[in-house]
Image (cartoon, rainbow, N blue to C red; front, side, top):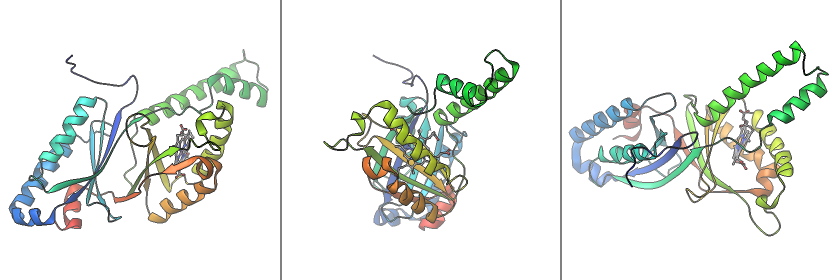
Length: 271
Ligand code: 76R
């Protein structure tokens, strides 16, 4: 069956790509080819530079595990696959060695307060009459915030901060600590603690959690934007003490990357 689009019911696909440059082949191609590669890759990135999608963002890895890194944001999986291959085709054959790649999708968390819960809380805490004007105004405010939150989670626009940290993670399923065997209420309670820790990092960390259960080797991709590496280290360290991570978190490899436009990336990597 041929289909012009492979979308999602809501949200977009996100792909993280990490490459090493084969320096021998690169040198053999010479500076003119390097300049042409830069120009054609730049052109592709400029054509895909929406705030959310279609977007290809470029980074330089500083953890030593890779050289170049990219993030592709696309609603259509066919288009995402095409962009991935077009990006690789900008480079001379063999010069780009894939190191790690990760496919995930944006999602709404299971643990946000439902409308019913919030309504009950407002009525209880603020002692409002459900038929009053005051309640209606309050409810309207909430609906607006909720819509904004949903839009941000499903169609993220990450801030242009200096660093991008990425790692995949899963929730544990061992005989004694099985996240998936917990009741929803218990998971909700635990996630409140997690979010409390996260909120302390407002202004220092901006996070994007994308779901990958059944799509890639871990269950979530964690993308953290930061100004400095200590913020990345501190949030991950502090979360290790929170029960959700301490007891139930399992982690893949960590990639720390500089958020650089392509020309700066070329300079940084001496390409
Ligand atoms: O969307 C929200 O802000 C609501 C609260 C929230 C949810 C539901 C939240 C807040 N997170 C949620 C879900 Mn998170 N997060 C991580 C990591 O290294 C580690 O130990 C864990 C990696 C970090 C650093 C982080 C940061 N979070 C999730 C999920 C999905 C779980 C599920 O569905 O079972 C994962 C895997 C996960 C992991 N989280 C926050 C943060 C930060 C900084 C916040 C506060 C966000 C804010 O205030 O805007």
